[in-house]
Image (cartoon, rainbow, N blue to C red; front, side, top):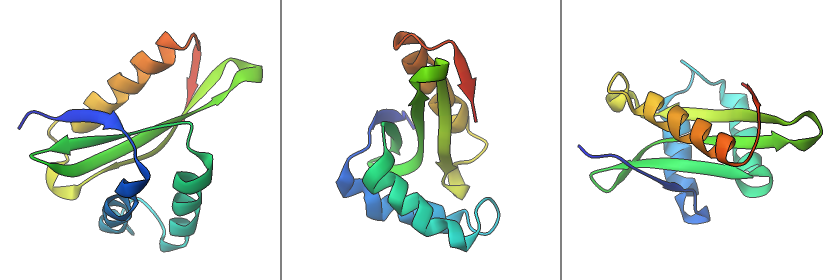
Amino acid sequence: MKPLIRNYKHGDLYHLLNLFRLSTPEFFHPKEEPDFVNYLTHAVEAYFVIIVDSFIVGCGGINYETAYNQAIISWDIIHPEYRGHGLGSLLLNHRIKVISENGYSKITV
C-alpha cells in the first residue's frame, strides 16, 4: 500500500461523494452534502485526493484568506476501511507543506 497524493480533478466528484456518504452520519450530516458538492464545483482553491491501489481513499483541501495570511484546512475525509493507517496524517502533512510553500503562517480548521 503505497499512497499517492494528487490534485483533485472534476472527474473525481463521484468518488468523493461516495467517501462523503460512507462518513455520514458519523462525521457529516446528510444536509452537508450539497455544501460539499458546491465546494468541489465552485470553491476549491487547493484540493487533494489520496489514491491507494488505484482507488481514491481520502481527500482534503486548503482555502486561503490572504487578508489574514491564513490557510484553512477543509473537508477532510478518509474511507472507513483505511482509517487508522496514517493516511489522514499523510494528507495533513502534505497540505501543511503546500501551505508553507505558499508563504502562509497561520492554519485554521
